[in-house]
Length: 157
Image 1 (cartoon, helix red, strand yellow):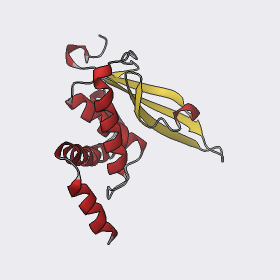
Image 2: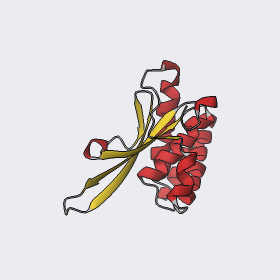
Image 3: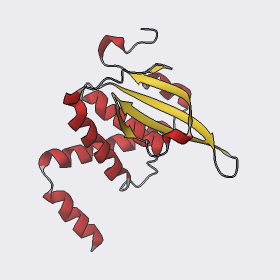
């Protein structure tokens, strides 16, 4: 019964929302596949290493960024695979890139309560955090990737 109720809820949504949720689902799948590839092969596709995009506000992007964030968080709960921080960050980055919106992906490390090393990923676009903001302050940034749009998305520029 729960599945039927959720399906009814999904079909009652407007066309744009359904489309964005489906897009999020497919980008989460794609990002999960990327997670199985050696990171050294994936890293160059994430943007300019150890660089950041500007923090200035682009008000025209606010609504789109919020909708992408919501779609990623909703659909990550319904995937048949693990869709945690890195998968969500890469999927959201690709959704933003598709809309010509720049973003920065951060990778951080910390120690858990038992002293074991743990990692986390989060994504920012302008001043807005799309994924991973809930716990990012616990982590020390060890890598960042600036996904610029256009000709500036080249190492060293």
